[in-house]
Image (cartoon, rainbow, N blue to C red):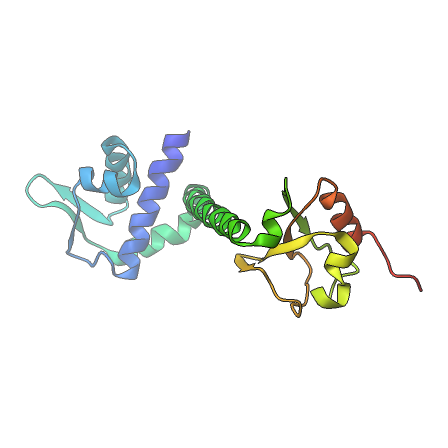
Length: 208
């Protein structure tokens, strides 16, 4: 079943490339082995995909001419009827790419944090330091306040070394940064720093 979904989705993708003009009518497209390399599948899977396109009169296949595009209208009709097939195969490809990017970002983030800790006398004195993350929840008393307003260090004993906001990372954010929902504070401190910081950000309320 997986292979069936794979070759049908590849046929759909090639048809979309025909409609977009990437593969114009009367043009030749790459041989099966090259297509297999592009899509990271076996030549047999590509053969099945091309077979589908041939049955739909989108391409012609001959011994001498190879694979030739013969109709962009048929390609359009094909993707209109079968557009749902794209989702599983290509969403999986997108997810794999995002996971690779996340791993690269996390690796760079760790390098920056370690560099900051090594360069800071204040942080080096925290031996052993505990690097933890605290997320600002939607009910946090910190929402809309700056780090200075919160008197963050005085109330938690934690030092903020970075702030994650979506895909952006700010190293050593200043005291005037306003905290928002879903911000992630990266802090260092003693063994109780996580409990104190999370309680202060997400549980504690000022007296009325």
